[in-house]
Image 1 (cartoon, rainbow, N blue to C red):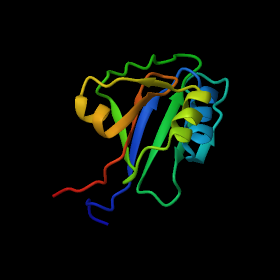
Image 2: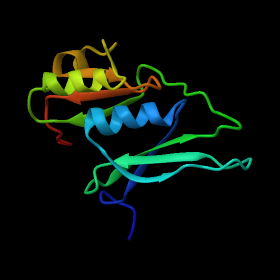
Image 3: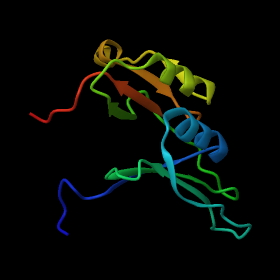
Image 4: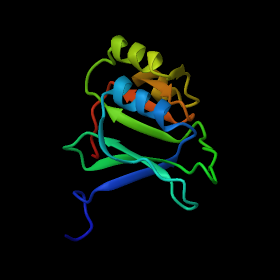
Length: 136
């Protein structure tokens, strides 16, 4: 298949704590575990957690190397935006907070007007946007 709009995308990020990340993304947002590898005690091996919606053309890969951990270095502009096309449910935001998320104000007023921004346990930002996506 040539590269294009239906090409699958993997967003890979380091994580301090895969169990905390799993609680946020699975129990909080409602993604599914697509695949996991618990790693081993051998140097060079790392634990891996892939999460997403099974029918989506993307997934999030979270990695942790116990022997040589990489510290996450998110900025306030490292965003994963989910377009809901409806008001952001307060119970969803509450569930994300209950599972390790932290509601934050965005430096971009657009996201404050049209959505809710929540930091995951590693400090990366998830924006739940009330608008729909349109590339036109």
